[in-house]
Amino acid sequence: MRVFAAAFRLQLTIFFHAIGRVSIVIALPFHVLIFMSITRHGGRMDLDQQAALAPALAGVWTMSLMLAGDIIDSDRWNGVLDVVLSAPASFFANLLGRCAAVGTLGLVCFAESWAFAMLFFDADLSFGHPGWFVAGLLATCLATAATSTVMATVFVLGRTALAFKNALNYPVYVLGGVFVPIAVLPGWSHPLSRMIFLSWSADLLRAAAGDAPMARPWLQLAAILLLGAATLGVGVWCAGVVLNRVRSTGRVMAA
Image 1 (cartoon, one colour):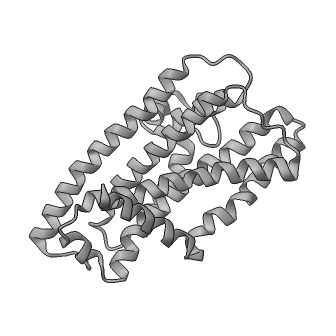
Image 2 (cartoon, rainbow, N blue to C red):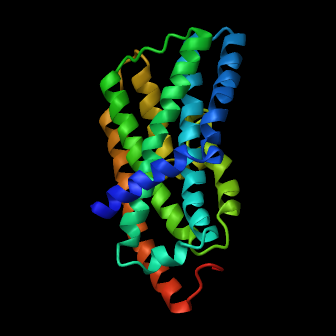
């Protein structure tokens, strides 16, 4: 637990002291501007909540993907990755603590998106079901942390995480129902979408933000938590495999 807490604090410190890592936060208002302008131009003020929610979800995934890669890349470039892997402290606890900070930082995306829409578009973003919305946010942050842990673990085996980060961005935006509900996607894509926790998060948060009665919100919440738990289990397994391979080959800094 001490390793987890120390890693959590370290990642927060790194994030707020490196301008390159806060670029996501800087860019997010412009994404809100695009979506809100589209809905307002079409006279669809009833879609204000959806227009504010899409950039927030996109920001959560982008932050998860970028910072998970940066954890490994920055440690490798700074020459400390081999020390982290060989330290007596648990590598997985260290990684999980840093990725938990990444998941927590996802809340910043929601707060920023909502604040920008209300301040500059005078949007009415009241919540029809605030309890379910908060529960969905917290579950999304937990699943984000678990997903970041798996990605960061796998990134140890590559020379750089840049290629992975570039490849995984937009496919998840689409399949995860970030920009549009998965109901409007082709039927063949639905099974793939339901394997991504963001698809359940998007459905739950959209429904909770609206005034209409919610249909089985507990199922969507449970799906987010179960996918997060399953991903965390995969992370534990991957950490063991990666450590064994790295220690047997001796290839860390030039993996």
